[in-house]
Image 1 (cartoon, one colour):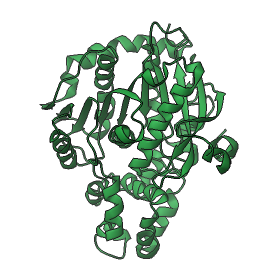
Image 2 (tube, rainbow, N blue to C red):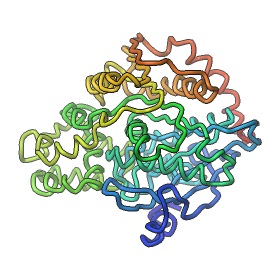
Image 3 (cartoon, rainbow, N blue to C red):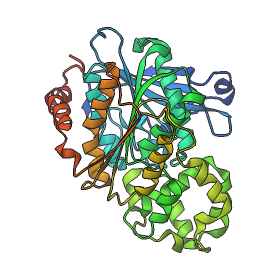
Amino acid sequence: MPPELDPGFYRPAQGIVASKQPGEIIAARQVHLAYAAVLPINMDAWQLSFRSTNTRGEPIPAVTTVMKPRTPAVGSRPLLSYQFAEDSLGQYCRPSYLSQVGSIGPLAGSSETTSLFAVPIAAAQMGWAVVVTDTQGPDQAFGAGPLQGQITLDGIRAAENFAPMQLDGADTKVGLTGYSGGALATGHAAELHSTYAPELNIVGVAEGGIPADVRAALKMARGNAGSGIIFAGAVGARREYPALDNLFDNYLTPAGQLMVAAKENLCQVPTSLVLPFVDLDDIFTIPNPFDDPRAVEVMDQIAMGHSVPDMPMFMLHANPDWLLPIAPVNALVDNYCSDPTARVQYLRDHFSEHLTLDVFAIPLFMKFLADRFAGIPAVQGCTIDDAGSVLLAPELWTTLLPQIGPFMLNLLGKPVGE
């Protein structure tokens, strides 16, 4: 049932949450997953309610979905942490709900979670365990990157703590991947790993469509097609950062107030379609609203670049990205690579755009993580490369094509992993 009707699992009593350690499981239940909510997937899957921590250091509940192949592992099984670009403000937009048989995912407009659920299925078919966490927290704080990073790391802890997953605890090789809103959670998790969850054996991170600087994205959203979804990120961030209340409570125009009210409970596609092509400056009564000092302070906290990830990174971005500007990503890579210990492979695609690269990136991310799981050393130091199109990369096709047949059989009921 939707999270709104299931508070016992999604919002357990605060006393219970506070009594747990980060990543400690509060409750678990088996679930039946489906592609597009209507095609059941034959794999082992559970939902876990667990304790995490918000950006103020307070205990909060969180939920993740863990899954594994039907077949026994040969040796140690790696764990993929896949972060969807949820990009939503409604509770019913959570991946833990939308991935189940009979959810309203296709009707709710969560195109990312509905269509790209193929990725966790393919990963499990490759023999990997998978954890898909609702990274936006109990209040659906879309845009609050540090919160999403911490919840992601605690979701991995919960998966490793769950005996039916048959993992090797903290020795489990873990890979993280996400694109766009999923990269917001993934990138912050990578930066926070060494201080928040250093015991996790994260061997690689692959991310693309990177929201390196949310404030830059807001400034770019001046009457373009991405205005609706980018502003939804500010609405979501306000739920975690009350410092934004002054801006929203005192300086929104009536049209801006209507826009916020319309977005409050929508999923990805509908919230993108609420007033796209609006210049965000036009819905505030002050010019350059996100230059307000309190807003700047929050946006600086949400921006990436506060620490250098301590694992190999594969970063991918489209040079003509119309939603998330590439300049902050270039600056982020330069920031990382100023540290001699950084291991970064950065690839810029010059012909893709934001949405198409989301799909094209998946095989490249899977290949990068498969190599890390296999113990193949990552490139030392930093490399920065430019490609006309990643579609010309042979490894994209050698990774993708062998997965198509098994995936189609999985949709027809074949046990995942056989």
